[in-house]
Length: 274
Ligand SMILES: [Zn+2]
Image (tube, rainbow, N blue to C red; front, side, top):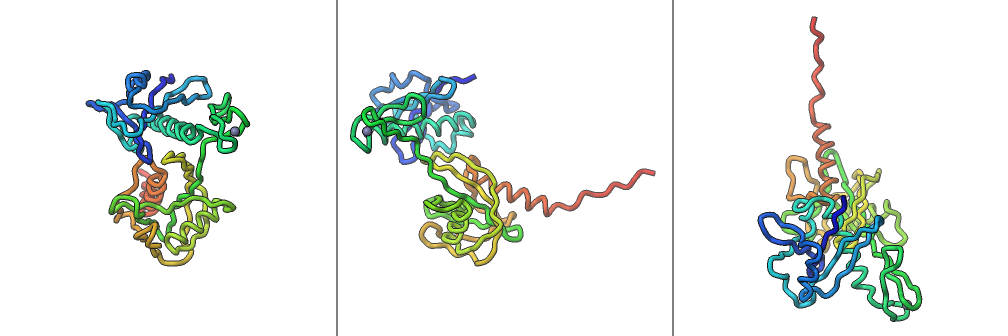
């Protein structure tokens, strides 16, 4: 059964979620937005198809977190509070951004309001309607003889490597985006691109489209800007991996499983008992 929740975000660029600290972290109870009104600049509802709704709220500029609440990276929410709350916190975050960025109409300057039916904002004067932004991005496991192409991005912690990813550009197919991103970031050419899975990635508003591909030519070379290192990784020499919630991690685990299965000795043939 659905139980409405309050998602309170701080002002950091990725919107950390404020949780009650205690033995086990938890969401502040619904209604607490009134108690925290001095700390909150804006709040709203996340209406669902069944008419129920969660509530989002955002800390006021300059306000510290209310006592008893601490910010956490939303990537850790699946482990702390489960997958359902993680997904709902991501939706709440994106609905909050839609509201924050569309208080006034970009066409005529009048105030905007929530759309009657859709998850959107609508101009009260000219009818201009704005939907949440989703930015498609590809992410790809490139494989060669049981090895995986991985890179260290300049923005992630030292020692952490992941598979190759990047935003789709206007005019591109997803396959072209895979070819271009892999080549730009590693100087490797790929072939045999096939779909793996997709994942909403609300940091802040990506739609990750996962693929697998095979090496065709080229030795990995980092671009030196986005990627500071790129290399082939063997299953027994793994670097630090991205968080388990990510599709990057799922692509890596899928590759690992297949490589290990291929390495496993064939099942023993049982001799018939005579
Ligand atoms: Zn307007």
